Length: 347
Image 1 (cartoon, rainbow, N blue to C red):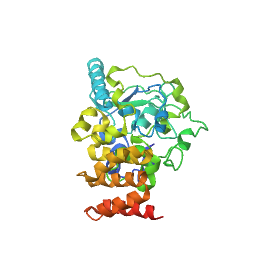
Image 2 (tube, rainbow, N blue to C red):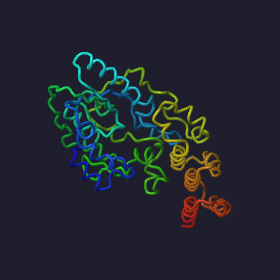
Image 3 (cartoon, rainbow, N blue to C red):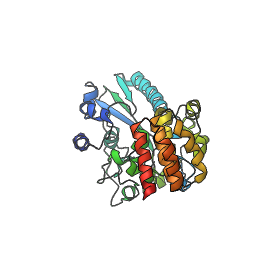
Image 4 (cartoon, rainbow, N blue to C red):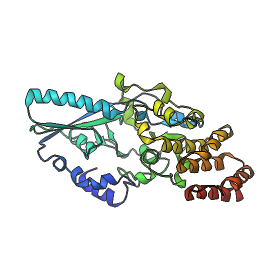
């Protein structure tokens, strides 16, 4: 996405609730907007490919699927440390000033990576590399040195539309354009409140992020599984039990996801996602864990527990439960979930 395309993308509202993208658009549009003294940008990529079938877990409805990038130590910490090491080396050899950025700063990493020859921005909006597929963490090093540029990379998506076709929520209104308002990765990660009803069933058992459009890219066949010990996958985060996850208290949540991107989600929004997955599981044995969350301190969690129960219980059973619980609920959003569930039961 180029600066002009960013403007149109923001104007269309495709950034959803990520208002910081609009607030930093001017600085993001060009490297000079962030640092006027910059003369060159060095962009680096680190593969996080695993070699596993990332779609297989979607059929295990009593298990939670966590996006591949989040089942390991937070990449921001790892990559930034290595960029700083490279920056020190560059300064020691060639002088100049440097600044390093990993994702959180207003930097257009993907267009810069294209210009640096690392790959091209695919139709799913993610950078694709001929050697690593689309499993790349990106980092940028800004410098005052005037370095010779590499040749930009050509687009090699061709006529392929696999990434667009597989999206469960039709989040791509056009090739190369992602509408975050419909994206499961955004909804389960960045979205703050209750996830819109229209997307809950499509979320399935994805409890943090979504890898569908990445997993089907044909260029992944050239990617080798990462052997970086600092980014090793955590076994406990590979398809964990929804039952176990739903019973975690805040301390348990923080312990399980310490050092990973999932921890930033917070306990309440994490349980929101888990309860949606429970509602989609079709597993009546998970009804007790959803019932336990009806008394959660968070209205967000209570509301998703109601939705899950409406999906798992027999209509008459849910109607009896609603008759006793709806009246005492003080949060309007949760009352709406009860009312919606009862209306479904009445149909």
